[in-house]
Picture 1: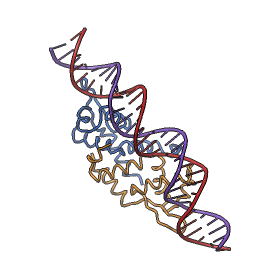
Picture 2 (picture 1 turned 90 degrees about the horizontal axis):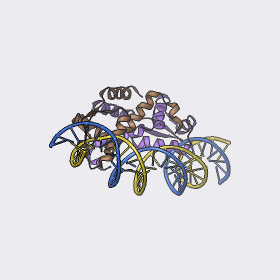
Picture 3 (picture 1 turned 180 degrees about the vertical axis):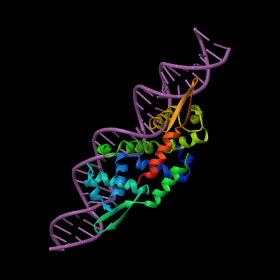
Picture 4 (picture 1 turned 135 degrees about the horizontal axis):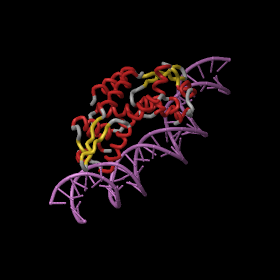
Length: 97
Length: 97
DNA sequence: TGGCTCCATCGTAATTTTACGATGAAGGGC
DNA sequence: GCCCTTCATCGTAAAATTACGATGGAGCCA
């Protein structure tokens, strides 16, 4: 996959976001976070048949893609959708093609 | 990944499209097809460092996701972006979250 | 301090994705 | 008929993804 050269930085970022949300579990987490803003990892784990380690890994992918951000609150972490980046994503999807 | 149950059919379709375009090579192909409408597979292969079999495989993924469609023209196949489904995709991205 | 909760990370197995060469089907021109 | 082009598919190797249990760091409260 040497085609990275062929994509603009914006397109690479867009592809990364799409890849992150292209996983059903992660798309579900995104929706869950919009319906339950500022919930903690444990809440997501509980709402899921997956192990804590797996959910944590998915959250990392979403974080790396800039789709969510977490704020430390005591021993827990409040996650929420990164609205700014999501708006950017929506704009890019709209204007592409 | 048992979360398929947790997604609506629309969301599953959306995830499939995102996954398809989440690959840099395939996102590049999508852009190439918008800039070169109705070009054939060989054109894409030529514009790419990839083997013909690899490009054909990527095209299949995009086809299965409903993002492109091909029309037979003699021994060749003209590919183009599926505008209807792309508009649907853009609408879903806009309304989600 | 001790114990508890919350979470990320490590190590690892199973599965999927990505890429390739080889093969063959289908259409067109001679 | 024969060849040439175009393309999908098969088989397969390498790499990435997905999932899990185990471990340990960090914060909080008694």
